[in-house]
View 1 (cartoon, rainbow, N blue to C red):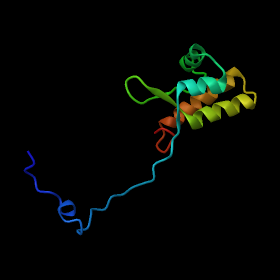
View 2: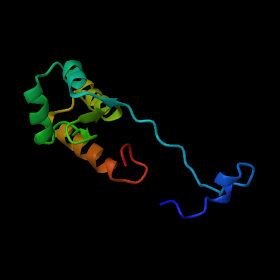
View 3: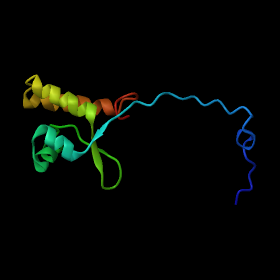
View 4: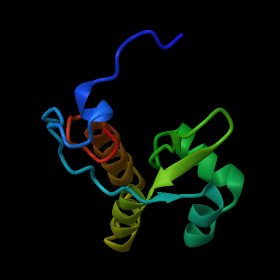
Amino acid sequence: MFNQPMPAYIANPNADAPEVESAPLPRVTLLTPKYVRCALAISPSQLYKDVRTGHFPPPVHIGRRHSRFIASEVVLFINGLARGLTRDERYELVQAIVANRSVPGGEAA
């Protein structure tokens, strides 16, 4: 089953390990849907209605049955509420947030 020889840096810990280019991973805080609902004082159905209609950032799925909201996105949304953005302006904000996800180096890229 394991007929291949071990790499030298594993067989001999004193050997030079291969160079691995690494970049620091961004720190992302994930929030449960319940936490988000409580922070916004809305019902579960209202939260998912807003997600479905594009008026709230969608969650990321972390398994077959679990999803979480990205905290920085929720904070951006709440800041928009505090600034008095209209519903249409909040929609545009959410679209910008979602577009940022697919950009390399974006929040959840």
